Length: 332
Image 1 (tube, rainbow, N blue to C red):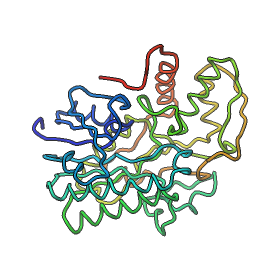
Image 2 (image 1 turned 90 degrees about the vertical axis):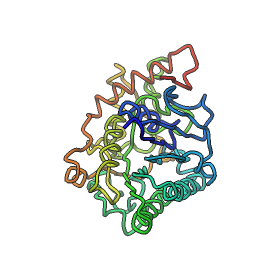
Image 3 (image 1 turned 135 degrees about the vertical axis):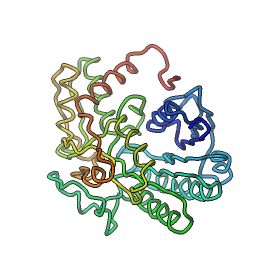
């Protein structure tokens, strides 16, 4: 195992940083690659080979994946709903990373190529009601994904399929459902709902102003997957000989956004007054993961309770917000 090289594209990001650490713990040699300068990586692992490269460029993909046994393609220009609704072109340009990564994976003959897709590929008509029926993998078609980001993900899923069918590149694809946890984006505009709400709640507690803005009416329903479940799922899906088509990787524990706000206020030990911004981006009305297929293939599904994961996330973000030192980069 120690002789195998795993390359994590997007290794300076939230999920990539956790995955790189886990792969090293398994005994892989790890090369982490990200476009961001090292001082903006969320985790920098000294035992990994760390490279700053723009993987939209084919030559940079050849440098990044040279000698790779496994490629984990997590790199993308994306963020939370506020970002993806206002940066559709930037999100779609990530297709260059996926295209060039697959081309080089074919060239070097990798034993596995993992691609991180998203629940944003699902047909919007299936997500109009807060009383959502959990999304099964077939619900991605007929295609009506999230504009911009969702189309990029859906197209790249198909590309992974055809590289597997036409060129024998052993691709594996997981559709992530709202991953959260420590060592992630919690401010600046790219953060997702769990981190954004946690930041706002902590700010209420620190300032004494217990008014909080909630995007939308707060009745939107979502499921959120803790990072440890995400990394475990990536490993199991990548190793599987049975999971060939895109598969859900997400919790099926459903909550409303208002419910998440109430949970975080309870964790913080405060009462808050919600102010709903109906003009803010709020995404689809309802989304949840159907986990029947992952249970069938892997006899496992994400199961870390939301309350447990959010307590850990709260503690970490609270530490960052109250620290006296720069918390942009965390070195293991």
